[in-house]
Image (cartoon, rainbow, N blue to C red):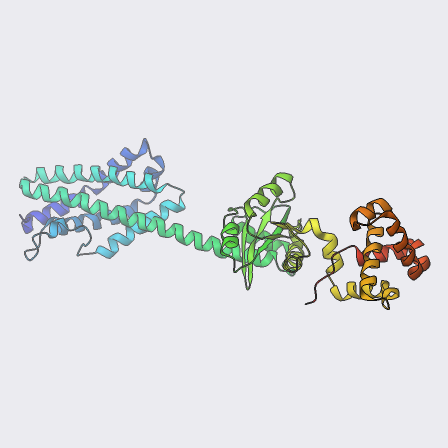
Length: 401
């Protein structure tokens, strides 16, 4: 049953006239449990009143079935006149509620309360106008269908705002990472970027790197938590992790990264993070060559190896220099005597410890060291020369590239 044109005009005018009363009723109903929403209605009264007027007009359209579509009164996804405007208004309301820090579930519950208040005003007005029961039923259906649609629009605006915020936060964090890993960024710029990224600046942090082609490694790094900053640069996958210097922080990080084959750069103040990243890349290279092991590998546990092999050419030159007296020996003899010399340096001349390590008799140790002394002479008695020998021989030989 359709609403007569005259009745429709009178009903629409009456409902628009009652909007202030309706909004007041809604605000009063919200105030006990949702005072922030009641305050929102008061603060945004102009925009809310405009949305209310559009609501009334759309309600009239929905409540009057089209002659060519008997089911039009029950449609739940389309409205004809001003549809986009109404839904955009309520999407904006959803966005505003997120900005105000309100929960989506509470927002939708408040909409249901608003729907009940709206129906009370609509039904009271319709009864006062003596409209037919069929019209009243059509109006009731339209009110709740339309409120559901508007709730959906508000929820869409709320969720879209969340997505926009997440994207902005991600961009801000990417910018912060770029600054933290740049040697040219000022501390003022870093602090400003950290505020935008909502990332509390720690005193110290470390850079974690994994193989970007390893799905398991990427998944484990992604699960480190929101207090870590993702590092996603060309051929680099990892994170900036704060508070690794504490025992609990280190233990927790090791547990989270187990199975990732990760490298953890040494812990530094924030202005030295580029150095932590550089050292982590060096350790990655050493791990690939089997010169350091661990899962994860903590750079701080291998600083000696890093220092020795940071410049392989220099280390190899030192090694060739100190071993020059052995150069003319047959290879097997040379290797045997170099192993004995290395053990002697490591165990500070303890023949029994050397014998156990080399699986030979102590007398054999004595015999070999006599040969070594013939080759090196007084160098074995010089603290400086012993230090050079130790530096050259006591770390694993780097495999050829």
